[in-house]
Length: 304
Length: 280
Image (cartoon, rainbow over all chains, first blue to last red; front, side, top):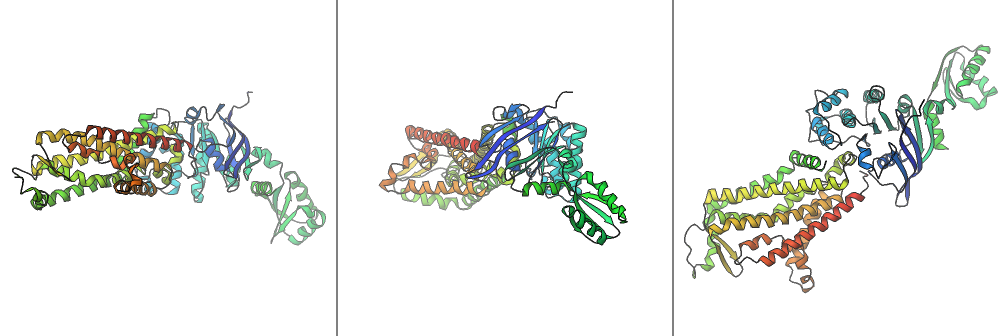
């Protein structure tokens, strides 16, 4: 089988603002068909990296190739195949959603028929509101319109910078479902930056984590997480006995204990062993739950 | 792509409420002037003609449409730059303030292309404002006050221009006035490239006009050398078409100075806009 094509190649990217280094030697690759998670705490350099990839800001040094072509030398050709939301989707508030999309379609580098605009508005659930001025749109509706805007010219690559920021839980679910639809139904390659780690875990197949402008780790989400120690919660009938057992035999695994739950820091493979140990000691186990995998992994990485 | 982008920019200007403030203001000011002249124009004219009445005899319709148009243009040419800057100063910085600049600059069109399409749209808006001013000041004035010879008051006397000569002088006058307003549009667009809010470029443009006007009118030897180079010195060059004989050389100099300013400022704007990191 042929290796998937590299869509984005970022090599040793550096961006300085005066003496401050916002991006420090960041490198990562995004392959065709990826939903690529771009993770990092606030101020890590995610937005700066994305803005550099979209030629909104100039890099101090480093190389960016998109679709195998150097960005600065092929800017127009590359941008005609990218749809993006940078930070938040801002539109001309005095115009309707449809007029906004018409404006951006006109300079998208492709001939976009009006029917396509109606189609993408329907896809994001804004049909019926397309004639309303954006001024009256909620934040969630603007995010949907932002996604519609990324799709009007049918690009190969979609870059979404923090697309769920400021949304309510239902809005987050809606946007997440839209992104999954883009991948599954439209075969788009998506680069998604987000500080909502569970979201990356749910959506992305590959990811990079950056902190203080530096790349910490990149790779397949499942592989990266499976190698890691999990936080596993056992719901038991005798919490004191369970706590005593763990602190005596495996103190390094103990995290905390509550009314009927003991939280252990163990690997996935160790779960059956600990379960058996509780049962052998006549401690009834009512439930096992591993949680906060990525958050824990993420925090561990950036704290290190 | 450039034409499509220019069409977009004209559409945006036409859709913004602020674009109509200038046109509404011009309509209101001209209406007030015409009404005042309609009610008591004779008294106003007598102030002008009084010093000459002992040596000259005035006959015919002195308070005519041509005179009204000339008075209106003299009054408005001071205020129109503000109305122009109100729109053109917002062309780049307004996109920055709204956040739409991010989206706009991720489209496959060069930054120079975006800037020039905005500039072209700004020039088109300036033309519309000027044409509206011409329509109201010349045609409505003539409709209300009728035709007649144009009496132009000068510091050393009166200049009477025959009615049949006035039209062509207004035509050339408007072309030079348009060039002066384009200069203002270029200045505010340049300031707009340095700012992320809409107010800054408008205030900066007006500030510069006021400063240069003061320098231009101060009779101080130290300013004498730079006065001919200031764009404000040449903004009223349109008035030279109402002199006899027409000072062609002086008008040509004014046109060159305004053109040099326009090209220089546009160069600065293109350079700045291309180098600008979009952080908003």
